[in-house]
Amino acid sequence: MNSRQRVLAALDRQQPDRVPLVEWVIDDHIIQALRPGSSYLDFNDWIGLDNVGLNRSSWSRENVDYVDREKGLFRDIWGVIRAFGPESTPYPVEGPIKTPDDLRRYQPPDPEAPGVLGDLPAIVARYKGQKTICVVSRDGFFNPSYLRNQETFLMDMIDHPRLVHELIDLAVSYDMRVAERMVHAGADVVVLADDYADKNGPLMSPRHFREFILPALQRAVDNAHRAGAYVVKHSDGNIMPLLDMIVSTGVDAINPLEPAAGMNIAAVKEKYGDRVAIIGNIDCGDLLCNAPADEVARVTRETIRVAAPEGAFCLASSNSIHSSVRPENYLAMVETNRRWGGYPLALDPAIP
Image 1 (cartoon, rainbow, N blue to C red):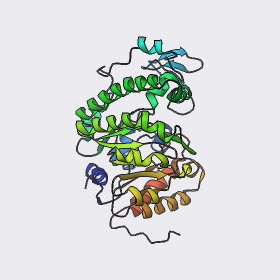
Image 2 (cartoon, one colour):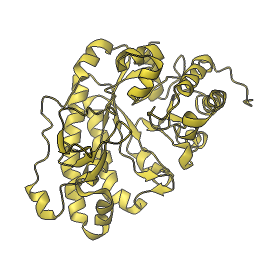
Image 3 (cartoon, rainbow, N blue to C red):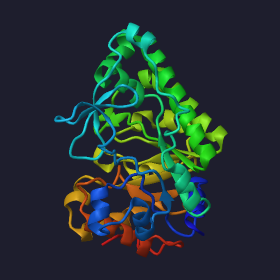
Image 4 (cartoon, rainbow, N blue to C red):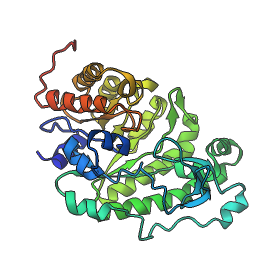
């Protein structure tokens, strides 16, 4: 199998020739540490990823609408004020929707804008049919909550439910059209990357998730499927109270099953493995940042042992290969999969 066939077999809940290695984002600090001077695409080929994408964690600090350059504050296309920090993804600071009247006057970004696809056409030209082309999109939580500020948005579910529905509809309508354009341009997989939880549990009750977020997630899943793509639902945190609902939407895979949040990949595989593929879940916190490389190899091998039998599994980090990951630990993860990830699996029941 080539890389594309390998990943798509896993997403079809089949057994490929070996465990696919995927990652949505690799920070440029890691790329330069391991392959100085390399571009993301050249690094992707060198490390042996089975997927490729826009690697959009790396926001350019040029040509942005600065509000305060000294503090790193700028306004994004949604009108949300963000701040550059030590990581490559800037974090939202202030949303433009302070009142319902603000929403009535608000003009969302244009999903038909020429820059929306970014470098996707060049990636498609280079990799179509060879690697699985993945794009990151949104569903019903991140973008609407950033417009309002996330804590306020969560309180609005009780205090201003109509406003929440209106914000979600506005944001999802944009995101679905962008995802549709990306699939038509050649993307194979849409990753819906809104995080619903922290390590303790969901950020909203299951009842509120069902009322507000689930319908938007269903719309986003159905839209990507109609366009011809597979769908991966990504959410950090402990999403166990929401997982039945998420799986019911027909997503093709769940990711990343964050171990630091108590997400047990073996238990999820056992309960849901006949309905969805599993993608994850090597801890990109303490393990990849601080542990010795031989411990990374041990955990990776154990993860393959419990999650890879009968296929429907791709190996990945528990979020991304961010700037604090030790480059040698990422290599240990990759090399362990290369050594032990071939089918039929040759792993002992007990990993030393």
